[in-house]
Image 1 (spheres, helix red, strand yellow):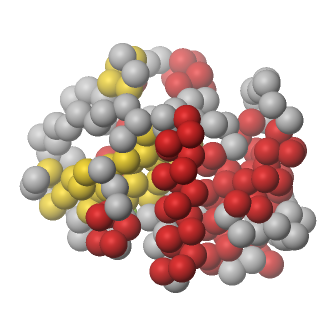
Image 2 (cartoon, protein in one colour; image 1 turned 90 degrees about the horizontal axis):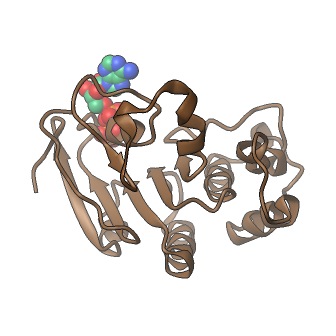
Length: 199
Ligand SMILES: Nc1ncnc2c1ncn2[C@@H]1O[C@H](COP(=O)(O)OP(=O)(O)OP(=O)(O)O)[C@@H](O)[C@H]1O
Ligand SMILES: [Mg+2]
């Protein structure tokens, strides 16, 4: 990243577009505190996360959901247990298993709760990854090509789900995508080229 400066309104949906290698994943990783910026600041909900000590990161990450570009499901866990995994260290005020089943149904995977990742197609694994990112009811969803491996009907279904959840509970969404149709349904598009915002 080089000289990137942007402000994102809470509750908005922002598409991050740019060719391969332009820095979309890197920007999402830095905002998600998965990679550390060598300079500059990232402030989320008035917290300057680039200054947080490592021991403060779990509490920051509790409020965000992350869909990784390559899904990163845990291969030994079922779809249901993958969705539940982010909540393991935390207490929550809702019934986590019921919520995980609902989310799997919402991404079109009812009946596949007990499947292992290797028994699912790429698109199905991606949908498990979307459900996993949503289980913690995040304020901020960082999604790296969440519809990249889906046909347009399935991609639209995932986007509809994300936009509905955003409307229901004011979730902010920052989403890398190559799909102009997906980007056009977002409130705003940020274009990256060679690590810079071009408009
Ligand atoms: N861990 C790393 N160490 C060094 N360079 C990296 C690392 N990860 C990515 N890069 C480089 O940073 C640049 C941006 O990569 P990034 O993965 O963020 O691009 P991207 O826009 O997500 O691309 P794609 O659309 O292919 O996913 C690339 O030049 C890449 O080679
Ligand atoms: Mg990427």
